[in-house]
Image (tube, rainbow, N blue to C red; front, side, top):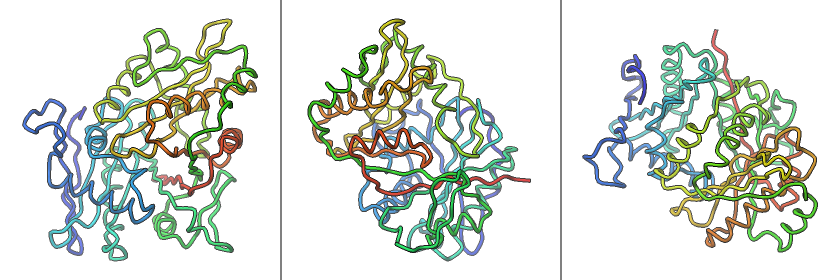
Length: 376
């Protein structure tokens, strides 16, 4: 983990709740055999995450694997990541985490709190949140961000709703996570829709779209971007960081270069994830002008995750979003034949990308709240 050690608050001990930092070994630690989770506390945190996902969704499609989690919490030169475990009477009761961007958005901190279902409504969540916020404050962070997702079946008809400040989307006021965030002084800035697509996509769709985007050609790769395209991909990723709707979250443009792309690719491989990428290349200039990414984990063989999709501004209106998405779905079906569905997320106000996903057959699965708290 880069940088000097953080001056963490002393281990919390309130109402019998003890919070301690979870130590993550560096990549150079050879004392652990490959694939072994390094500590009891880390295993406890991962178990808490799996319990939460199973109780909320009934599956682990959205849950990081052990290898992914270990790789993520090691952090990198672009973001420090810190994980904490709460125990009550010696048993795991919950966790909290703080992520600290290091290159851009250095006034922000990502905050997450998770409580074991049997320990809820007993002050564990409040204690964990206060602890995480104290860590962020000590690092001079003045904007705290967090999120949570709610399955579609919890949106009952006629339920009182909390609208997002973006003006699009809302969450049920009675949902425990919504009530918790609101009571803690967080503002609902944005709502994203999560959607699921059942595979396969209709035969012939790719051929029809290619005919409508004749000025462009599709290039594809697995896991590792070819050297000839990496500068173009880095430029698109930098654009992606600000072109997607972020409501009032105020995220700064990220500085992407080929080294940062390679770092991201290496992280994926170390975590055991695979990716397929489809990009649109302008025939006249050879420039990459659009791309999309799908990820898959062997431990979750039936589901893939749609990551970012972007079309550069001057090339919008030529059906390139649909072009690269259909091309990539076709590649995913060929490379990962066990995959029967794809998950994706879109800001509720991003009607153009939502319309593409709806045309492909994506159906709503739930809604995610993006929350922010400004510190005085």
